[in-house]
Image (tube, rainbow, N blue to C red; front, side):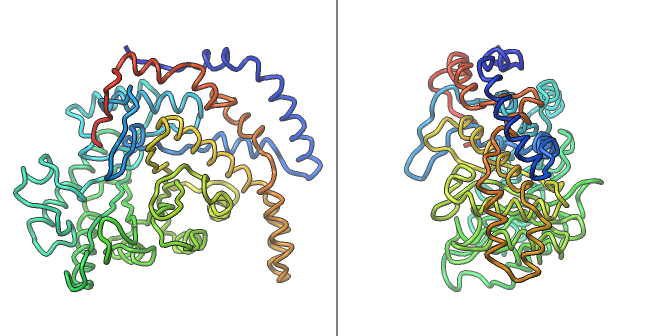
Length: 430
């Protein structure tokens, strides 16, 4: 039996919240009207926005020291879609799933697409995996990605990596996806282990060949990361390298920015601006970090930086979130994965509303007048605003929850999945 959360259940569970919400919304709407800000335009933009949930994020995360499943985890890709359907029911903003192959490798893609369609969930960018050996993708161990995939000195390894990526594209085509994200673990752990230039050239040529395999209407995203699992060098280590690779690959190759894939203190908002200027900003993975690629809850550590990043996105989109691929790329080691995704989505929605509040005319005037104090005041006026009534209303207009986490808990979804899937169920593919 499939567990579902319905709009009717949400309405019933939140009946006692409606009056207070409408009072708060009316008060905020009146304040914004005095400032000549269109509250409904902000609500509409937040309601329009959707961010993909990755299939791997609905299972409990872990570290090299251990993993502690919580029970009721999805055992199949279909059950992952069920969980994302429940997530979308309370947020109204997670309308697509991003699959990771071969962690998700359906035997019957047409049946899976039909299942997702019935649940109202679409398929976002596909993700290939050449950072670990999998019997289904490495010919039963005949070749290995131990020393890289597209960067490998061995032609057979590069060929296998290309074949895997093409197979992921074909699966995505059958599912209705239109994009491929390529994150490579290729790099070195020791000085002198490989030649930097030859590694880069092999990756560049492989990506160009892969780009030429894209179906009509598809895009490919190069995703950079400075370290891990390679700790001396990564082939695609930063946004500049990612841009070079995308430009070499072809016009349908763009760059993907993951918030955790930067060295400490990197000005990520400037990275976003540079990639947007070149027309090569293709995707964005939301998360947060304290030390590295921690995959923590969005906005939990650096909320003001996240606000500035979203402000750059809105600027690129001329007052709207631009049409690039958005996904929450997080790992939930202790929280219920769905609760963490709810909190992350809520933070994204809230930050979009804050960014839309910025008075661009005043900010432009302060910048042109070389008045940094005034510019800071303009930004802080928006950042410090309590926009929760606006995002709650955006969710309500989408048939979702005013208070998504509280309502999710009250509806007992996790207890229902434990009863159906068992206390010992562990998410597939991790």
